[in-house]
Image (cartoon, rainbow, N blue to C red; front, side, top):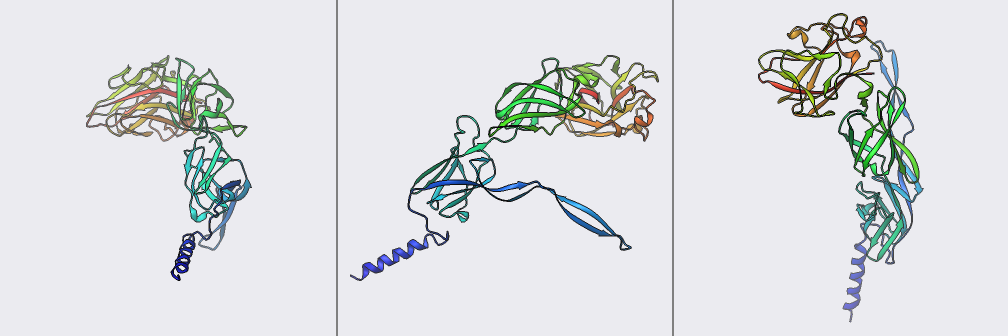
Length: 411
C-alpha cells in the first residue's frame, strides 16, 4: 500500500521538472490574445560623438561623428505590423504555444523569451500582405486551443531591385520593366527630376514583384521614379534609388538605332549598325576592335574641323552610353574632344572597364573627362567645340565586337 504514494510523488516531481527550463508552468486553459505591442522602433534622431585628435605639437582638432538609425525599446499597442519587425503578443495561457502564424504563414519564436502571458515573435519577411491571403489574422495555437486576433500586415514600400533600362523615351512604344517588391499597392508613378520638374509615368501592368511602365514626352532630363502607394490607410511616396536618363531631352550621338543628324562614324575598324544585340532600340552600333593592333572606333560631327561640333555649356553633366562587352574583360578608353586622335598609346585616357557578354551602363561626369589627350577638361577649353566621341582599345590577341546604344550627352 505504500508504493502508490511514492509513485505519485515521483510523477509530481517529474511534471515540475518539465517546465524548469521555462521558469513558469503554462496554463491549462484555452489561450487568449489581449493585445499586441511593438517591441522596438527605429530611432532616426541624429546622434553625434565628438572626436578629438592631437597634432604632434599637442594642438587638438575636434570633429563630429554621426551615428545612423538604431533600434530602441518601444512599448505601444498596435493592430498592424511590418515585415521583419518584432512584436510582443500578450494574453493568457500562451506558455504552451506550438505555433504562431501571420496570415497563415508560420513565424519563428523562441520559448526562452516567452511567458505564460506573452510571446515575442518576428513577422516573417514572406508573410502575405496583399490579395486573398492577407486576411489580417494573427493566430496562436497551443496544446489547449487556438486564439485569433485581427492584425494587419503593412505592405512594404515599393522597392526596385532591377530595371530593364536606365534610360527612357516616349518614342517607339518603349516600355520599362521594374522588378522588386511592394508594387501591388502602387497607385501612381512619376519621374521626379534631378534638376527640376516631374513627369507622369503610365502603369502598363503590375503585380507585387513586377511592374511595367511607359513614359510620356517630358522636359525632365534625368530623375528617379517616385511611387505613390497605399499603406495602412495612408497615401505615401517612395523614391527609387536609380537615376534614369530621358533620351528625348538629351543631346543624341547615337540613339533610336541611328547615328544623330550631323554626326557620322569615325572608325579605324569595321563599324556598322546591326540588330545582333538590342538594348533600348532594336538595332545598335557594332564596333570591331581587331586583334594585333590599336584601334579607335567612334563618332565625329561634321568634318571634325574647328568650326564643327557642339558648343560648350556648363549644363552638360554626363556622357552616357550602353555597351555590350566582348569575349573578355576589356578596358575601353574614351576619346573626347575635337582633334584627330592618333592611333597610339597617348589615347589611354578616360578608362572604363567593360565586362564581357553583358550590357554595361556607363555614366561619366563630363567634368572628369580629359579633353583631347590633355590633362584638362572641356570647361578649361570651353571656347572649343566637341566633335569627336570615340572609343580606343589597346592591341589585343583576339578581335572584340562591342555593341553601343544610347550614346548621349545629358544635362
